[in-house]
Image (cartoon, rainbow, N blue to C red):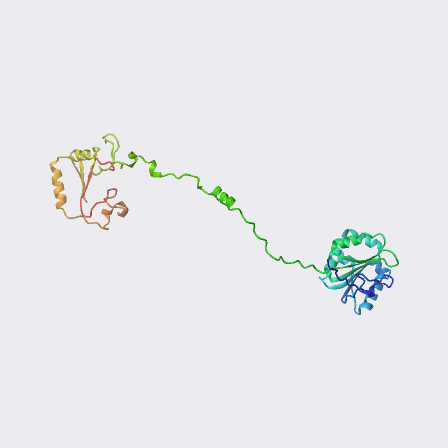
Length: 322
């Protein structure tokens, strides 16, 4: 793995601890805005004011100042990639109280640093030996850790983002076995080559191929029957209808009255002749002959079958639909 350049401000490192940090080469200073994070205790004893005065003098510009409780409570949020260095100065008691909420604070500080920006934890004691581990988990790279001497501190750095390499080529598809592929298709197919075909014509016999002759059951007068005999009737219905036409009664309907005459009556022939000689009946609407669907509410032909226009309607009393 190629070495990564690490930058820090040499002016903020005391002469007794200043040393090369990477392959014997001195670190270069990072130019940019700085943030000083203090607390109530360090502000009361004057250490925080001394840190701010030293930063202003070394950087040539005023360093931004924030209190730790405002960051923890969410009163302020650091702008992303805004600071070249962030300096945290707390008392040992405040460092101990910060440990439960250290990771959220470190993530916020990491986001506020620019790439290769540095974090300086100052005024530490020997009781905070686990802080480098917490910094590594948060994403920092440890540059310097001084636990002895008059100025114990830890300096960490935000690494450069790692660019993910693009895939050189798409993975090749595996070759499939044609035999296995055909067996899978045959498994889900409705028919398979091994299934024999059946000829439907071979299942028919000579009797099945003979066209059936329509026949009627013998008709009897006591049972219900069809309305009219069919052509070439062989069941006896045609003879029964002819017999009823000779012996049954006939109704002659006129526009004025209804006359019932018996079979063989002399008046029947006279009335039929008179009906044929009478002028054709006319209708006020002209739809009486079409049937009940086209007749008026007071039509005298309601309930009667349709007839030809102008003819007299003759109805046999022996018909089933009367």
